[in-house]
Length: 328
Image (cartoon, rainbow, N blue to C red; front, side):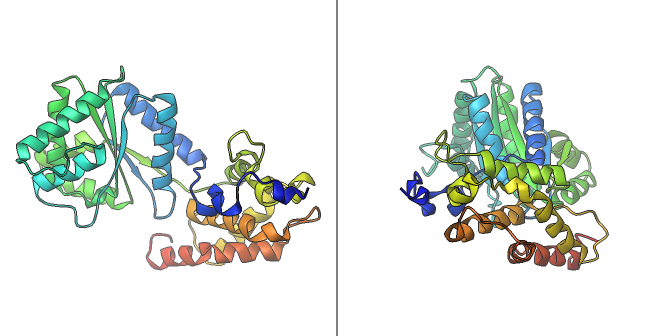
């Protein structure tokens, strides 16, 4: 039987095809270590910031996945702050009730009842674990206004009276640092918000060195789907080449140099960081678009490598960053 017909699922069902996999990187590992630290210390105030497309949302999801394994009873929720986030306390509480999973989030009731339901629900969930913490990642946190932080602080204070710690973890771009500075200029109230929610700044990075880059390639060579099936991601799309010894890691030098060459052409002085968006897109295209060309003699040429990187839009995105003065 042709090995391609032995794939355990169809190509369209694979996580690489539909982009539903989560990859551990050096930066994600550092972020998870920081999250574990604030849990141990029951310490709010963690801010995770980084540039657009660097993989911050994936990092949150990976941290949630890891916590579900390492601490299955610690509740972890992700709140995505919208551009039109409500300036009304009751509506804001409704959005939080929806995120934490309260069954009556849509009920019409007073703001005080919404507040009580939120506090009671979070407390009940947190008390299932000895740490007595509730993790709330807030994505695009720079969209929050001071009044939103005040309302979260009200919930935080009421939970503290019940021995539970709400740990909001703010995630966003560099605007979060600007927001922090602006709050400090408003006096004691702004200082209180910063001290409660913005004390520890943790930069989230892209792939910064060749070793990390090649290690990430190795993930595709070793991660399997379905789990323990023996079908690594690379083998799934290129089974004949894989059986002949081809590994993504073996193209690490060529791919890394390809990204470096694309970046150098833009004359940006800052050291290169490859955002996860463009790294994963490059590899996803490599695997999915070459599956029909799989053979025992398959190889990746430099021209094909440069074409993949170009069509990932890495260079175009970096040029946009240079124009926007995010990179110089």
